[in-house]
Length: 92
Image 1 (cartoon, rainbow, N blue to C red):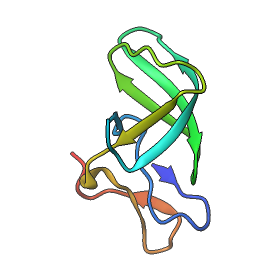
Image 2 (tube, rainbow, N blue to C red; image 1 turned 90 degrees about the vertical axis):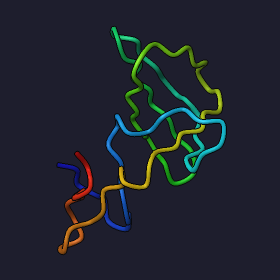
Image 3 (cartoon, helix red, strand yellow; image 1 turned 120 degrees about the vertical axis):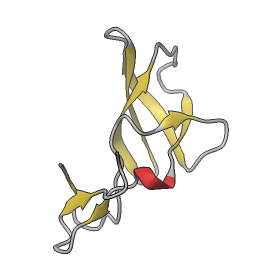
Image 4 (cartoon, rainbow, N blue to C red; image 1 turned 60 degrees about the vertical axis):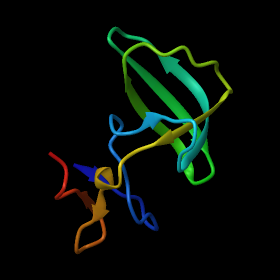
């Protein structure tokens, strides 16, 4: 379950974004960890403050470097009827 702060219209789960040459989410990488088979990234930029992303596999990303993420339209989580809990009826 994902709870949305007031004013947000959608959200995405940390495992849905992928690194892209062209994408909709422009960020600056602030921290990364490689705990094993995944790379955990903290990034920020524009409306994406303190965004957490879990990338499959090992990725070498320099701190403070620009990173572009994208995800499929079906990965978006939209507010429920009360506007607080993010739901995704299309996710598997």
